[in-house]
Image (tube, rainbow, N blue to C red; front, side, top):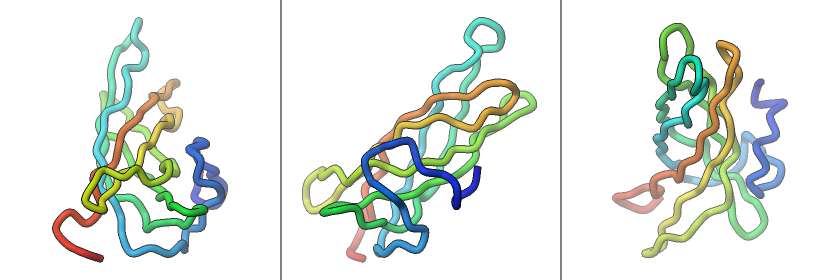
Length: 124
């Protein structure tokens, strides 16, 4: 997969534009769900920073891409478009992401997480 052909996992933000406006990003960290539960149970961890805000109606979303950590001989790619902004008070917000990793070593992992708040110590 690449940025030009990826359409997200249907989180409600509509078409994305890699050159979309916005002056903020979000940090994120998560763990995948366990895969190969019967033969080789394992999961992976991942962290990153989203791309800039992409306008979507009266809200916005973000693109993200990254890699998981390694387990034995493989890792996975993560790629998604977040859902819309979710207010958390004091003018701050987070986003939700739910998708699946790339297929590597014959399997994929599901994942879901909420981003951290944007710009936690100041204004953009």
